[in-house]
Length: 168
Image (cartoon, rainbow, N blue to C red; front, side, top):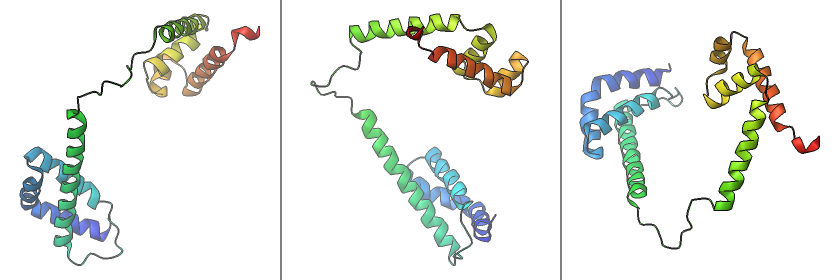
């Protein structure tokens, strides 16, 4: 940790209660003030030694104030987005058309059929990794194989699924 970061960390610990009160006046609640204090801690851990900070207390309070104001701006934007529930009447529906739904179902049926033709170990690796979204090391552990073997199974499965059945 740099000298500036160390000194600011110590100052943050010593001034924590006063900083929380100052930030709480800006953000309006204790939990929000705690969030700002956490952000402040993380921010000061990344401060370099050059240039040296002469007024560390002033710097710390200014940084806390700026983070609190940033949080308030973010809350205003998120609040405006979530409160805007009026949908203009000329906005198209998000639902796909009946034709798109039918074509999607046909594509899904073809993929399901292709998956069923995979060798069992490839199918199992593909399911655990892509559907269950397990990390490769966990898939390897469950299957009792190496991570490299899991990668091979998935590569084989993807190659098989990407083959165009109309080319035969």
